[in-house]
Image (cartoon, rainbow, N blue to C red; front, side):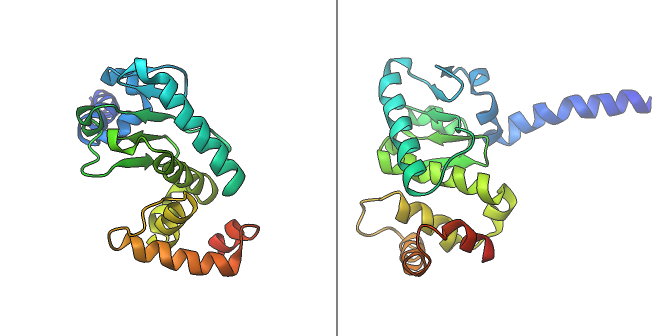
Amino acid sequence: MLKRLLLICVLCIPVTAWAFFKPVRVIAPELTGLSCINDIICTDDVSLYEETAALFEEALYYVGSSVGTIEQNPRVIFCSTQACFQSFGLGKASAATIGTFGIVMSPRAWKPYYVRHEMIHHLQNEKLGMIRVWRDPKWIIEGMAYALSQDPRSKLSEPFEQYRSQFKVWYKQVGKEQLWREVRNL
């Protein structure tokens, strides 16, 4: 009887996670009806593959040359509709990085600086670990992503503008070469 109960629990955990913690869907987006052109780019509209591939490649190159080398390319899900994006349960966000599992982009986030921003979060998760990224001061995590992605908006909503400003001051003292060492020392 105990074995049967344990088996039922083990089988129910993934189903429960899939149903109630929607960001976990980034692990297997094909099960939600999305098309994955390759292992790293998925979308709800395959006719837009060239655009998604260009955004991905530009961001990967930019982050690699400006912020740090990404060890494992993230899976990026480009949603061309808000319904697609909402199926991941990410609320009002424009995009989200789910640890090192993947990135989900809403239709309004199909801009180079948005994709760079999320790839910087992916890199942070690789270099620092997901728990550390979750626990570190938001000014370092979000400030880095906004500042180093070259987000062109002159004024962000608060507290993000403050995070970006604080990071820029800190980064000017630290410099690119010492970035990751100094982040780890915070």
